[in-house]
Image (cartoon, rainbow, N blue to C red; front, side, top):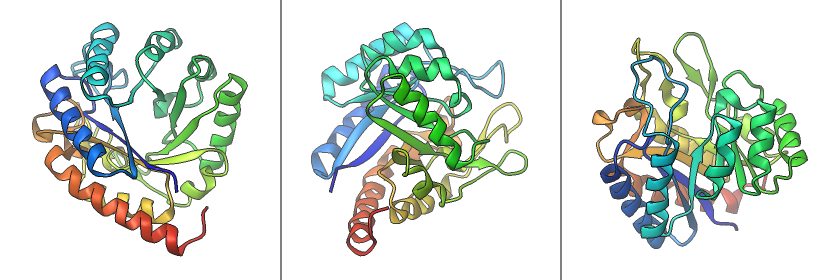
Length: 264
């Protein structure tokens, strides 16, 4: 059985202190759970924000500097998201996995730019996409030369300021590539607080448990030492102190699921 992928970290790079504290805890998790493969995630820019006043991050150059420090000090593989094709090459020099945001999942030039770097690519399924439509996304990536591809479920639009997860999407998308479940963005309430997004953090762990039981290849969760003070997506981020217990339970569920249910 392959190692279970955990993509985790603060939503956005706020400052080095938050990033390094989170990375240290995630490194400890990597050492404690051999069946886990931890990839550190944080964004240098959150281009898709509710308001012009929303915090976006430090930008490409400073963000990559901070991420490089995480790799140097903690030895964790890295991921971050790109929003424009010209960012792919610079980001690929630092990270191991390039993330494509959900709202940009069909942007052909962006997908081809990410694929052309030779790095692994993780595409968030758009809130407007049916799971079977992600087969076309994978086809674009393979045409661009991508070899290691992940698709991430993060919920679909359901009425106003709300998302819902259809767990049928996991085995459907697994026909095309490995599948990650995004436990924290799935409980986001986009624009739910007017000028910023809200969230229902209390539902993140139950939904993650369900996704692991269904058979996902990994979990994406944003985590922060103090989510209530986070500058982006605080209402749906997991407190850093709770991550170890969550991961331990998810690994136990995965072991049982693989033992009793045929592979998808």
